[in-house]
Length: 317
Image (cartoon, rainbow, N blue to C red; front, side, top):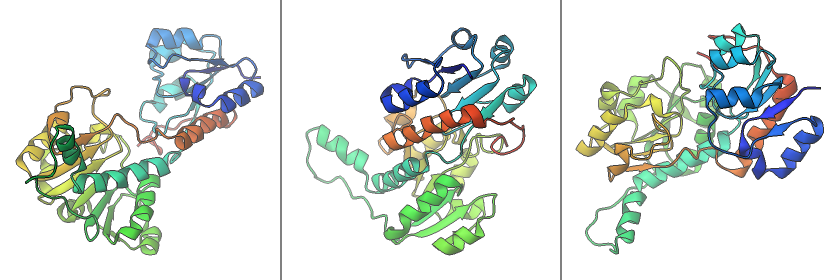
């Protein structure tokens, strides 16, 4: 019988899942403190356990070396970029991760942010909070009739396509994977990245964070975007050069941006938050009961279904 240490405190929000997991594995240990665990704290917490059900904890070489009895690491998270498969393989540890587990929640947020950005809701809300009402403050635009670019058309990108159908928009998509059948079914035009940047009125990023995407949206790429475009990022913050984006928001080359993710998180004090045409949220893409319930249940499944991670094989590419 596996001895399970749960490092994420989110089971407290789902007492029925907590009870179910405890019934399946009676020796399960749960955390209630939501503060991140340091390496030393993670080692101490998992000592004596052979299975860990985790959120965003980092099992470094030092941590894995100190926990030889730990054989399974089951992820509840939607992303997997905090895991190094080479380290896990070196120490003989299996893992579990399920792709697309939060696709509905993140795609809904992305489409919400599109409307939010083009209608300038962040600005108009600030006007109201300042005690003003209407006046000569300019206008927003409709999303209908716009060209929407989707960079990365995997699980979440596909859901965005489906949600955009009633809006009467032109949808472009760029991805290194061939999704031709899906594009044909949903009326999506496949384009290369350069064309995506040049034509999109609103561009939404749904790429994984890996060696090919970190820093992809640098000054050069942002300059290739259509003047007056809007940029949405509900993927990972490290994909966009935030300093370059701030300069282009201030110049007006990028008309507005709405981000749920940042290069450094927590992002309190990030200079982008001072830009009137920028809206940010604290990485809430999967913060719905539906998504977290699904992610926790996935973590529970991984206790018995874990597999050996392969460096260089999806999602580690």
